[in-house]
Image (cartoon, rainbow, N blue to C red; front, side, top):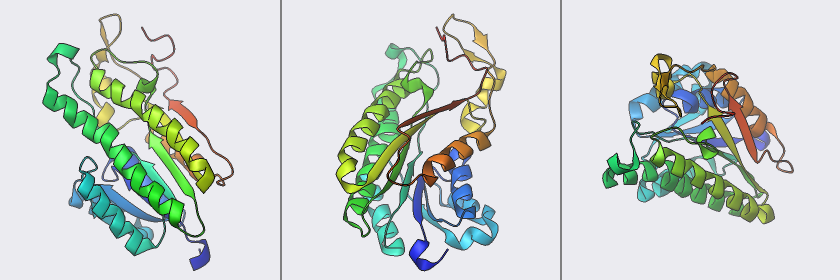
Amino acid sequence: MTESTMKFAAITGAGSGIGRACALALANEGWTVALLGRRADALQATAAMAGDAAARCLPVPCDVGNEDQVAAAFATIEKSFGRLDLLFNNAGMGLPPKTPDEVSGADWRRIVDANLNGSFYCLSQAFRIMRHQKPMGGRIINNGSISAYAPRPGSIGYTATKHAISGLTRTAALDGRPYDIAVGQIDIGNAASEMTDRMVAGVPQADGTMKPEPRMDVQCVVDAFLTMSRLPLSANMLFVNVMATKMPFVGRG
């Protein structure tokens, strides 16, 4: 890429799993990528995996649930890159299955900070940069979940935050129109990663049983993500659902 065609991205949760895989894919396509996450060593490891593209990876340690850290991280991105063309709001967490009365206030605040507040803080900062840069505009992709449509048993914190992400996506997509900011959401079901390892042994089902669930290769998520990221700003994939074909989603419960 020439200097005039270079593209700049930021990915949260880039130290492992889906975030790492998508960051590496962008770097290999010529993007310059800011790697955001809590663990500096994991971000450095992601950059090292990029091989010849490692020089285009910028590790930026940041807890997305901390508003001040997010502001500082995006100030670093703006200073280093000069602009931002893509944000993948990917960082998030889950909790062990619990009924509502078993979820502590501390755990509730922790998952809301990681999944919802963090996504808003990052979206807000990216929106600001994209709105005021020249040329104006950019793309924001939020990592939702199939839990944004149908819950799993014992997942009140995760499901509530993912439903909220859908509202975040719709509103930001509407607010972004005047500024050429396209906002979409990728809803993922059972991608093979550390977060879904427990599905191999079995997870609670709506009928009260424990059953293993099929998973899909993370590359399937990467391919869908890249399709979204390659679109011109005149087009947007508002919601994309990519999931393991045989997972119990349609008809869940």
